Structure formats: structure tokens, C-alpha cells
Amino acid sequence: MRFRERLNWYETNDTNETARMRLTQRQQAARKAIERLGGSGGPPIQLAERICAALSSAIPNDGYRLFGVDPSTTLVNRLLAASDGDSWARREWLRDVYLTADTLPYVELPTLMRLRLPVVASHSQQSACWGYPTDILAQLSADAHERAFHELGSPVGGTILASFASRETWVAAMQLYRRDPDSPFMRSDVAFLRSMATTIGTVLAAALAREEALRSDHSVEEASGIVLLNQTGAITFATPAGESWLDHLRAVEYGSPDDLPTSIAAVVAGLRANRRPSQQIVAQLPGGAVSIEASSGGEDTVALVIRRRQPATSPEIPVNWPLTPQERQVARLLALGKSNRDISATLFVSENTVQTHLRHIYAKLEVSGRTQLLRRLFRESGDVCLVPSDIA
Image (cartoon, rainbow, N blue to C red; front, side, top):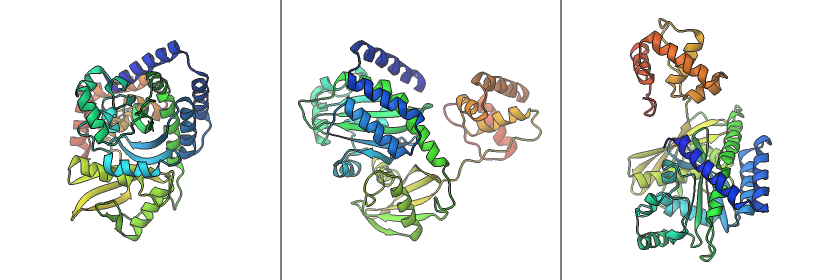
């Protein structure tokens, strides 16, 4: 299934399931509280705390954490909210567990996002795992699953793993966990949270977009910063710009300002798990996006380069192309990899209008579709033009 189709399938089925089971008073109150946040404004951390409080009243737990997500890598890049007392467990998880579940891959948030599974419950007993298609759980026997679960040091009462999307883009991910083995999460908990996933994703995406739009002259650094970490994740060296970038990254996080920023911990985990020469992640700050690149520095050292991420520039549409001004706008946005829905939202026109413009563009340029148009643009404009893999 495509992204939207799969999410629609889950939302429809889980909405029907919640209707059949009849929401409890706490679930009804949580739903209303989260829906009201849609028009309330406020910074991401404030809204994230309110979302977590509402969900915790409907789905009791022993701890939770809510992260922002870099949609290009599906790595967590920021801590938006966490329960009291979660700090040590979260640091341990990011350092020792995150992206290391090779024997139990379907408990990793990036894997679940790739599988388009918005909400699942994981438990040591496969019979208490909810939200998974049977073919996913069938990858391991019940005994192998239980051994791998305990080897990871997972909370023995189980964990709900949730990912929230907006406009077909992942924006946040959440973990709720229990420590009592006799009190696992129920199928109804997964169904309820799935029915709220789109609302939560929309609320958080809007808050993050508002925050990013709040630019100021001193919001982010211009200079690139360098930071070195040792094998335990401790900072051993940082240039002045590197120190400043660390301060900016900590300033937008929930929790202790002395903790290693989540984006740094995640990119290091990605470097370790993917066994590549380097790993990059994008984090959002009020002044714009920040690129963080990690590479192995030898002798168990990780070198980080942190810099402002330059926005993608739109290639110039050749002046000899016989397009109207509106068609040129559509072609320029298409060249940046925008979907029809994105182009529609940017130009404040319907998707049908976008499709009509595209048909006219293809006909005038004698191309069969997006890929051919982008290849012709690359040849004739001389600009570097990336062709997204999903638009052929």
C-alpha cells in the first residue's frame, strides 16, 4: 500500500474499532483535549506536554517520551516531551539500544515508519503484541521473540511505539512503557492511539512550522561548528561555533540543558548502526534547519560538523520554454520534488488545477511525465536537479 492508503486503512479500521468498543470517559476526554490543541497555537514543547498528559490519562503508563523526527532519515532529532524520571532510561536507550535491535527489528521506530505502521504495542509475549500484521511477527518464533525482547532490556510490561505523520510526512514519534509484566498494553489502547495519530501529527507539524518561521538575527549561527565525542558520548572538544550550536540544540529540547542533544545522540547511533563512513541528520531550530554530520574520527572518536542547512534553490526554468507564468511556477516547484498536494498548498489552488497545469506543461514540452521533464530541465538549464525516486 502507498503511504496514505495504508494510514487511511488503519485510521478507518481503528476508528471503527474504537466506535465498537465505545470510548471510555477518559478516552473521550483525551480526544477532546487533543483536538482542542489544533487551534490553540503555542510552542512545540508546550503542546507536546499537553498531548502526552492527555494520552497518559487515557492510556496509563510508567513513562513516556515524545521525539521530533527527521523525515528524510526517520531518525529522532529532538526531545519534545518526557515523563518525570525518564532521563536516565532515555539516555541509556539512545546510547545502547536505539537502532541496535537487529534480532528484533520490528520494535525499532524507523523500521515501523518504513513499514507504515503508525502504532503498535510490543511485549515479551507475541500474543500480547498488537498492531502488527501477522507476517511481520512471523519473522521470529515466539521463543526467539521473547529472548530478543529481554536481551534488549525492554520494559517488561511492554511498550507502545507510535509515529505521527502530517501530509504524508513523519513529524514525531512516541514511546509509552510499562514496567509491570502483569499489566500489558491492550489492543484497545493501540486502536485508540491510532485513531488519534493524524490529529496529533497535524498539531505537532503546525507547531513546528510556526516555530521555524520565528526567525531572528541571532537565532542561529552562520559559522560551521566542530564537536568531538569519545566512545561514551562525552564531548571532548568543541570549537566556539560548535559550543554555540550545542546551546541552540539544547535550548529547544525538553529536559536538562546538560544532556547531549537528542539529534546528536541519534546521528551517532545512526553512524554506529549503519556502519557507514558518515551519517547525516537534519534538526529544526526557530531560525531554520540545521545539518548535523557525524563521521568516525578513529580511536573511538566521532567528529561532528554542525552547520546551517541551506534551503534548496529552485532551478531556473529556461526562458524559451513556452509556458505561462502559472505553469512556470508549477514546473519550478515540481523541480524541487514537491508533490501535487504540496504544489496545491503552496500556490493556493486545487490539486485538479495542478494536474491541469501539468498536462499542459507536458504537452507543450513534449514529455511524458515528471521524470522526462526533470531530465530535460537538467540538460537545458545546467542546474543540478535531483529526481526523487517516487515520482517516475
